[in-house]
Image (cartoon, rainbow, N blue to C red; front, top):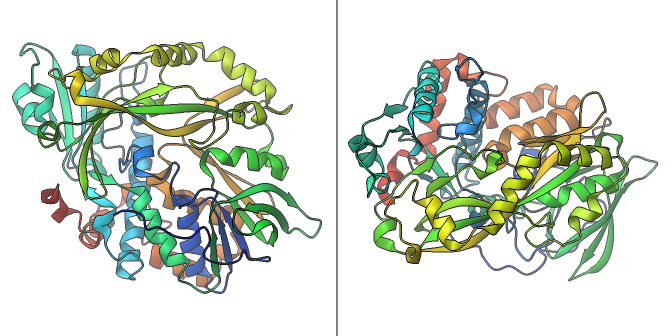
Length: 510
């Protein structure tokens, strides 16, 4: 679904909203929907710096589009020194993704989401490896996961013909004697988070007490003596504005770090950011695109960040099927795709200088990896693609720049040095009046669980009330429960959410 054209703002900026949501992506949209269903009388002001919502990290061409359920992402299942595979993170992420599906299915049931096919499609998830060592790892991973009902549909094969049947491009031109292995889960998904965000925002702004200002940039955020958050906004339509809110949510992707620093809360001290840009090869030959219908993930190169796990990826964007390979990491000092080249420099403060220097010293392999990535030619990139699709030709692929990701840098527990974190982190003030999200993948796929964490940290008293508990249970039928430990509940909720989201019936529409 193409995003509709809208004027820069749906109305005047509210001077005294109960809540200000900074950033018009999937996180702000999810929090806004939940708050209005938990407490309909709340007034919300959404502030987005770009001409439309979901143009940065939530946009279909700026993220991998995978419904991250740990079905194929090998970085979520590290191998221990003794050869066993740790699947605890995979189980947690799978549960969180199922929670997201439950919430989206509830919104379909309630009429908030009119057409789920706009944003979610069924696309099988595969893991693919080459060589004896990686084959042994993948088999150990499969053996560890198949015991858990969350992964009960997973198949494993070392047979080249079976792998080729699952994903024909993997076998074209591949030597018959090469050692390969793959796993497949047919019920995986492809998600257009931009289209989902647009539907959620469209619903929000149809409600009383919700305003959306676009092309409006937050320039400062400070807490007054009375606990209110004073937010300065520079709007193209309305000029410089000030608003005062009881609660502020900073869900501005890479732009969140700067605003967290401006807020001055102690909990935000010591955080830094390391920006990583991404690029994909996009296939231009529709005959090739039509032969592949899967998300095929491999293993990351030594020294590569987890977000750089290579994958040959079927996407469905604006109703059209696409085939991408990558990502190829690069370096840009910008924290947003539409950001400033001064973003990284401006983020350096006295409180995060030592963690930044420490991470730089301890991650030279990452630095060297990024340097090598930047130096790659088109031929080099296609050569990497040939590890997945041996018959790939340079002329059938073009390079597209994806979104920016800002990896978290934070102080070590002892306060000395720093460490590079992967994932999404909720940073909330002790008084619960403000929260910011930092980090990246698997953020969007686990957005519902992340926003529940925001609610529990910032609306702790309300969450404990019977009214909020009841409403949370309606929106999130597995709230407070563990799907990994209750197979009957898992299957019951899985069947319902897949039916409402029409996932099973969509595989043929690719």
